[in-house]
Amino acid sequence: MATNEKPKKASVLSEDDANALVVEHQGWAESIARAVARAWNMDWRLDGLDGAAMEALIFCSRRFDPARGIPFRGYARKRIHEAATDAARKTKGWSRGVSNRASAEARAREVSAELYGVFPEIRDGFLPAQEGGSGDEQECRAAIRELLMGASIIASRQAVSTDPLPDELLDYRRMVSVMASLEPVHQWLLYRVYWDGISLRTVASEWETDGLNVMREHKVLLVFLQKSMALGKPTTIPKVRPGLKPIIQRFKQEGSKGPFSDVLAKPELEHNTST
Amino acid sequence: MTKKKDDKGVERIGSTSATKGVKGTSAVDAVDKVKAASGVQRVSGVKGIKAASGVSGISFEQRERLLSMVSEEAEKLAAQGFIPKNQREVVEQAVKMIIDSTLLEPSADKDGKK
Image (cartoon, each protein chain N blue to C red):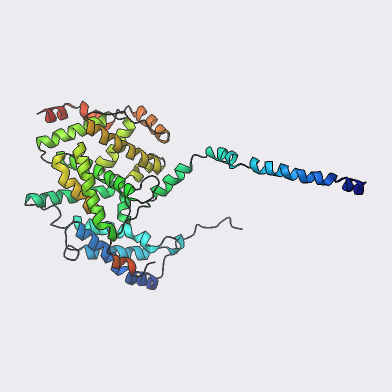
């Protein structure tokens, strides 16, 4: 009789086995810390990335459940990478930039740090996935374009948040105007991802829809933005895919026209960008 | 009776039905089956699922090529006006950083895979 059967308890490793995992993967965890340090032009030891990676490795070894069938590295890589980047962001040199070059580097770090939020698969060693997934050069280029477009939106948004130059304000206004031409649900998608820093997968679970709906829609929106920015005016407005139709109803009930339409309706931005 | 029929070779007419069998083979044309499957256009959905799991793993050996691709694509997007001129350097560098941060040196991948 299995009526009072309790849910299976996670079968974590014994302390000895967990320690053995740590010893086995120490070099690999350090290489993650080194990769982060190399990318952000830091010292993986002096800046404490090694310690953060080790801590995350130990943490993962204690939580790892082999019964789930996920390889240890697949389970731990994202967490170790995240620990290393978090440690890097806490260092004194993170946002320091005296010369123009160093300042650009510091800004690039800020943009890249936010980009992890939009494309969390990067932490696992994957480019943003493309339809078909053949892994050829065209696919790589499409993924890189997606990253560049995402980075550009983040950079424009960050630029206006701190003492923007007139050119930066104009660029920002141009981008927001194009976004404001979109359907409210599309505006919210972009806003949640690039302004609130929420990943596409999290938006999908918030909206109680399949992750693919949101990922595909995001790609469509980036292509729309790319074409519209090239033309200098909005092109054909993308239709909302059927999978997102229930969300439209939700926004209609809330009476939202979309965050960018609302921003443009405010007189402050009009004033700031017209001067 | 049976014997008679056998003598007349009635049963052998059945062998002509073997010719029918040939028709049968052409009738088993895959076209019919494909038509039935065409309703299953979710095949593309299956591809999508594969893509969503992130099949484009990148390795350290591709580093130089990937970073140069970033520069090439950034140039195109800047020319189209998507990346503002004053942001070009920052955007390009940010994407190079995020890609580089995920490329592990080959020695680390070799030791003790589990």
